[in-house]
Amino acid sequence: MTPPEAGRRRLAIGAAGAAVLLGSIDAYVLVSVLVDMIGELRIPVNHLERATPLVTGYLLGYTAGMPLLGRLSDRLGRKPIIYACLAAFAAGSVVSATATALWPLVAGRALQGLAGGALLPVTMALAADLFAARRRPAVLGWVGAAQELGAVLGPLFGAGVAALVGWRGIFWINLPLALLAALAIHYALPKTEARRDTARIDWTGGLLIAVALGLFTVGLYNPDPEAAVLPSWGLPTVLAGVAVLVVFGFQQRFSTTRLLDSAGVAWRPFAAGLAASLAAGAVLMVTLVDVQLLAQTLRGLDSTGGALLLLWFLVGLPVGALIGGFAASRLGERLPAVIGFALAAAAFSWIGATVPDIEPGLALAGAALGATIAPLSSAALRTTPEDSHGTASAAVVVARMMGMLIGVAALTSWSLHRFQNATADLDTPLPFGIPEAEYLALQADYLKAFNAALATQYAEVFTAAACICAAAALVSLLIPGRVRARRSSLDGASPG
Image 1 (cartoon, rainbow, N blue to C red):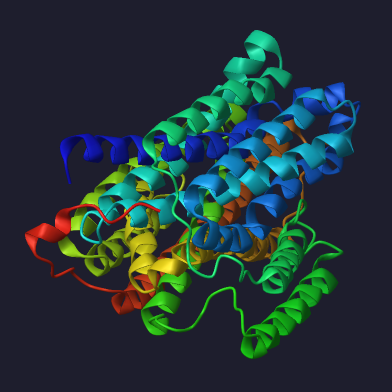
Image 2: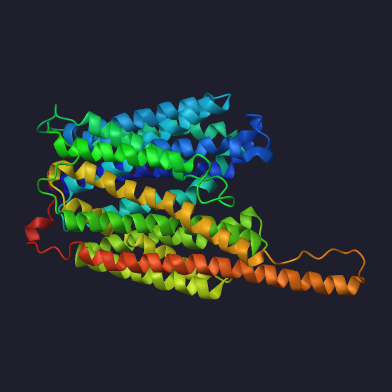
């Protein structure tokens, strides 16, 4: 690889990574401005559930379109799909910025999610196109760090822009950013060569898997997990998703054109990587939810204090992603993934044992989980043929997203149920008919028992997260080990 060519490839993956960061920031940007948005849309603060579609709409678009768009990038090339995603992201931003009612805003967010979500697997596949297998994990580490950095910067970015120009400015500023990313991609990437079988795209399979994932996303997202594990619409929606998934399985079995052609796929390590990604997503989302709950209940912090506590975990994610990428480049994917999950298991066990003083454990857990991102992504690319890298990358991200949804629906709701059982026999003391000193003593005993039940609840959740990480470490033993390659293989692969 000549120096100018190497520089253009680094610029190309940097521009695509910046686009991933842009989409990731928008996934978290509503955290700090949601109250302002619903106020302007005349949604009462005591009816926040009416704003739930703003979250589920983005998740639905983010998850459902990945497999088909990943496959389209396999067939049509990465460059045109990245262009299309950036254009759609900008269009969704315009719709969101100009919306004066809830549902147009939901539609804009869904379009943003569709485009922003597809940018991640397409960029991962682009890394496989531009860099050989031995260098690829380090590049994927940078891409993973960009994705995770969005969780840190999103709320801060949203609050900063909203303070200057209002919440609509968050969406308007996406237009020049998307344009700059498109120009960088245009300069850095050579013209995409036509790929083989460009006319053979499994639209039916892509639509079926998108519908199934969409149904799972809506069915598993529970805005009120205290009442039940699933929302009232959850079970029939999930069952409908299962039915569509069964139809998809039959369609893939008998169709001559498939979303992911089985030829050349090493299914055992590929499936192991997907299972580990699902586990990582479950633990990630449970941490995001339960650390905030712990901060605002057991430690008596406000939402800002909860966000600062969560930063211990979030800052570790991109740092760990970089470390995991460089380690996988030298040691292969298996060892960093196993060590990352093992350290995460130890960290969550530490958190469970030290509740409520969890800061050091959170920092280790974030770095350890982050270290698994690049190895799992790289393993999926190594176990699938070159012309299926977009689909394989999408599968990894979808597995992680579904893990996030399943994790928050199951673990958090289970912990709330356990907490309610633990506090069912606690009687709230009332200051009537008893001396004040006796009432204060009863109140102190009640608060002590209540906080003990809370601490037990969170300890059980984080212990369960440790068990999930330990299981993921065992599963990761099945993904590929070290790459044995000559020095000449360090040169980049042909671009696509």
